Image (cartoon, rainbow, N blue to C red; front, side, top):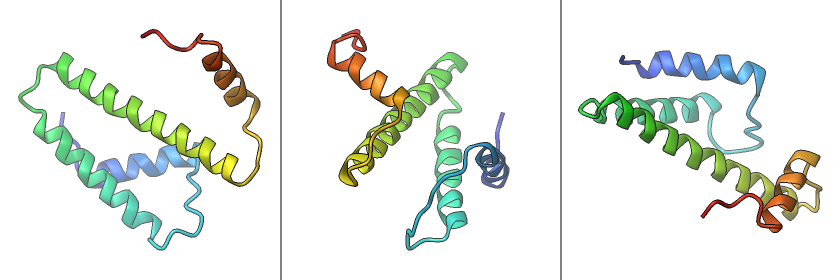
Length: 105
């Protein structure tokens, strides 16, 4: 299944209705950033056309997991740099990680 950058951009906007992104005062237009991401992801998906469905799904999940992790780390760093507390869910996760309960390696 192929999706165009425009279709992905529209899906991104729909998802953001439930969970908006705080672009703060970035010196870029929000839609320009969305368009850049949509285009890059569609290019990535197209480059995986020769992958088996399982390999494609695993690759997309790995990329998604990396981005979620990176987002969480940046969010925590931002809160800490402003002297703000993390919410209870993040604090519970961090505490579990400190005790070694979050690692399986």
